[in-house]
Image (cartoon, rainbow, N blue to C red; front, side, top):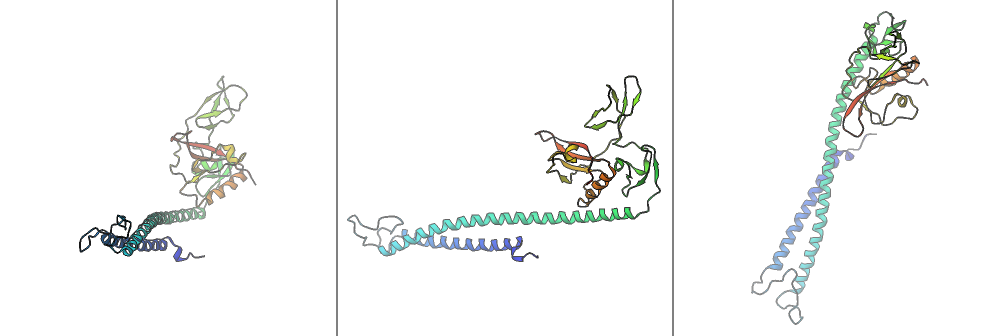
Length: 311
């Protein structure tokens, strides 16, 4: 349903401004009337003597009404003067409230304009990303290759990663022999023989699944430059969920979800497509988050491995 033009922030702002001008005009009229009353009450009579006064007694020393003034006129002027003072206070309060409302409306209008500009910019960026993805998906795919690391034939995804193997989203189809961040470190036992147990690296520490005490000899790993701009906030983590088991915490800021970043998530549709695909292939998804350390303002980048479950 289209929004009524009378309810738009711009229309409300215009109405509030007109109301403010009307209140200000009423206030000035009261001030002018009050000045005239005070002038009459404090003026010296033409024949001399004491003025009526704003709050002086209207009786003489003997308790009789003053004979030098119009007592009825004096009472009427004083009554009206007190009414003006009361009305003036109420108008001042109404003007203050109106000013606050106008300030809030102007702030909301400015925020709305800024948000519309951002939305238009994001829409253009997402459209550009969508067009690029469509072109990549429609492009002819190369022939499958044999992957010596997994012993399987693999194919190329639209984004250049490897399809059909675990952690394939972190590898390049064009260079299958290149090391990837998901590669495990080599284990060396006390006698120098290599072991085949895998070690998952998280924050610089490894966990060894071997039965005997072993010494880790970590091979140089390629540096992965994580995105610096988050595109989502983790506001809920269900107990015993894949996210909980991966170590994701409430308050983490999402930097990367597999190969998905703030530049290509396509309104999060890319994540919705990747999760069931990874669950069907029984592979994990590397996730990079920006996390605040304890109660300080220091933030660190954490990389965790999420293994989706098939529905």
